[in-house]
Amino acid sequence: MSDVGPLLKHWRSARRLSQLALAAEAAVSIRHLCFLETGRANPSRAMVLKLAEVLDVPLRERNTLLLKAGFAPEYPESELDAPSLAAVRDALDTILTQQEPFPALVMDRSWDIRHTNAAARRFFAFLQDGQAKTAPGPANVLRRMFHPDGVRQHVTNWPEVAEALVRRARREAIGGVTDERAQRILEEVLDYPGVPASLRSLDAATPVLPIVPIRYVHGGRRFDFFSTVTTLGTPQDVTLQELRIECFFPMNDETRSHARQLAEAAQL
Image 1 (cartoon, rainbow, N blue to C red):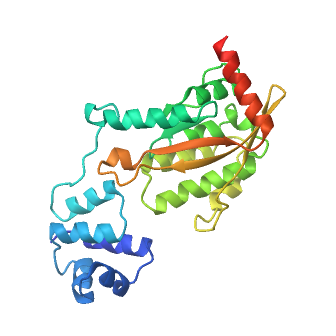
Image 2: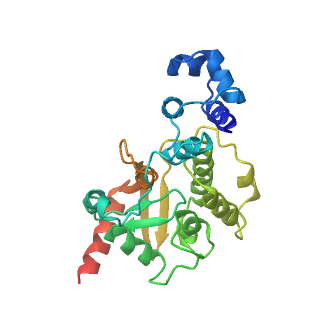
Image 3: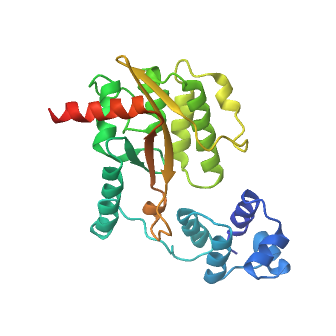
């Protein structure tokens, strides 16, 4: 007997669907679905993929469902620098370049920064006065924002931004987008000095504003941004599905002017 049943039940509960609702969406009988969840019946490969599609299970976790059911994985997981992803890298470069002179970056499921445009490198170097990062490990959005020697010291509305990031990280964990490493990093940054203990008890299900401004002040200059997060549409590769592109947009003319000044200074 396979042990895919409990996982199917987990995803159904995570999506807040009753057996009746899932059975109707997947066009299977409630009795058969009940047998699958309790292990009294084994699903076919096609059934696993069908239920995963209806439940909107991320590709990495679909592979896990298949393995638990005794089947080979369906979706490849490529390195971002693989030759087969050259077209994707070109597309990412185009998106990041189009965002100039404002910051943009690409991060993975662990919040590690995989790629940035020149504006992001300029801006964060400006905030840190050209110093190397102080947080441990690879450049990571959570560590960069929470570390006391990182950019946190320049964010004037840091409590608001920190709360939004924690809620987002936990909401992604519920949705199956994140991994154990991301959760370890989140626990790590919540232990950093000066981080309020109240952030540990935040309810991930509580709605948050769709746009949370982030306000930086450094060297007598003020930068007010909001950001949008984009994912690649209908990816069939685990790595690509887990990439997120975050673009920062100026909220006022002062920020536009300062960003252009940084770009012009870099060309001198």
